[in-house]
Amino acid sequence: MKNLTLLFFPLIICFSLKAQDLYETQFELTGGNQSPNYDEVIAYFQKIADDFEEVSMIEMGMTDSGFPLHVILYDKNRDFDPKKWHENDRLVLFINNGIHPGEPDGIDASMMLLRDMVLDKIEVPNDLALAIIPVYNIGGHLNRGSYSRVNQNGPEEYGFRGNARNFDLNRDFIKADTKNSRSFQLIFNWLKPQIFIDTHVSNGADYQHVMTLISTQHHRLGGELGQYLDTQLNHLLYKKMKEKNFPMVPYVNAWGRKPEDGWGQFKDSGRYSSGYAALFSTLSFMPETHMLKPYDQRVKSTYQLFLTFFDVITQDGKKIIELAKIDRESQKERSYFSLNHTLDRNQHKLIEYMGYESGQKPSEVSGHPRLFYDRDKPFIKEVKFFDTYAEGVAIEKPKAYIIPQGWYPVIENLQRNGVRLNALKNDTTIIVSQYHIVDFQTSQRPYEGHYLHSNVKVEKSKATINFREGDWIVPMDQEKNRYIVEVLEPESEDSFFAWNFFDTILQAKEGYSAYVFEDLASEFLKQNPEIREALEQAKSQNPELANSGPAQLRWVYEHSPWKEKEHNRYPVFRLEK
Image 1 (cartoon, one colour):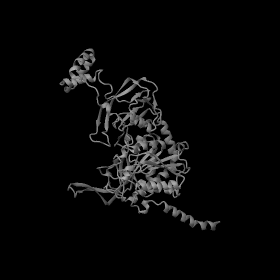
Image 2: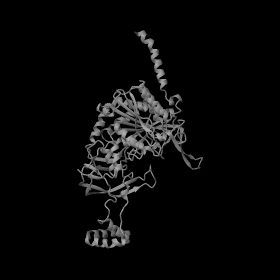
Image 3: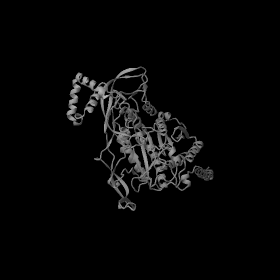
Image 4: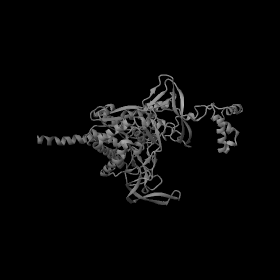
């Protein structure tokens, strides 16, 4: 029997080598210099799905490019139903690639990862269910060349940051202007991953690290997962990547400053992929390889990071599943939600940073001083990393929100994200809280197709509102509560109000003819002496108002029953507890 085993052993090795050759990637065939075009990527994954029963490739949703999104599913048990995965306590890992197709590292690393999984070249964690979007920004991937990232060190050709409509998709996860994002929201809420990874490449300084990492901000994530991320998981990821000879550092968020002076953690608000995922109690990460490093190193470091997550899942998978369950269930009962977190520079951690000495020298272009890094002078030192964020606004959740049916873009966004809404079955009068927008700032230049609002101030009051059959109630007893508050509270920095969904309320639709309204205003003030007294007080505090007749007439109109109730009234109402 022993001799028979020895006889077949060379055949097994030969078969393994042939299988490896059969599924060799373009990255490997070209010595790490090339990344495949879109058709080649999809063909590669389709071949693996055709050849191995534990892999399925499905189309799920359309993109702005006219091509559908593909999702690759891996399951040893060949059961490709996320609902059953969660019923059976499976850990769902979701990898998104090519959101910026000029950064294709994750595409090539995912091709090799899946290949090595099905060929049993790597140990796959028990009970892992894996989902991969091979190319998310298809339009950008089709717009191929080598010109769009002027500083990047390979591959020979790559895609463009903007999608088919020139949107940066990593700013579109709340507003969902693109078909890509709308499809992604359906996929994400179908999968309900406990861990999400969105692969990137970046550069803000020069340093020795090949891989940097954005972990979702743990105070924003909150709950048991936030605590676990801060006290255990991040440490584990950095430790294991160092053991794999790719020592990692947090994303070097030191634009315009020296990294050795320290930097603050990148705050991934809901517009970004990892910040969006965190709203659903998901551990989320954006690995950012360093674009000045050779392409083969960047892909290999991304591959090793995937394996590091496999190590973590093998060790802590059951814990992560349980913590996610606790956090998602707790969202139903939470009374308060924290928004608009701000960096606290009074607290920091010390991290090991492998950098290059930087300095100033005359620019050969302008003659003025310019920044440069001296790669002949590497250093390793401890630097300050500021990763403490404090809440900016605390919102007490209502019993429910009520949204008139005419605001269907908002309704559709909520529904895509798995929010449960109930339609009113009859015309109904309800006492609610309402907001009036009293102040805000608006960006002066377009940002991703919008003029973003910020520093929003509101006044809250009680009102009796007549709602119609078909208006929508959003009960606040669901796992999606954090997302709901984030998008519906107008003071939130990534709310639907901030993204201009409600701008029509900011423009008055009715007015008055001054020469007619003068007499009405005079009679109104006689009948309402308290309004006359308020006007006199306002004049005493505001000389500009006191010296302007038209301004005083406008003031009276704004405080009169003829003032249109829709102007500046936020059309999402709170049914309080």
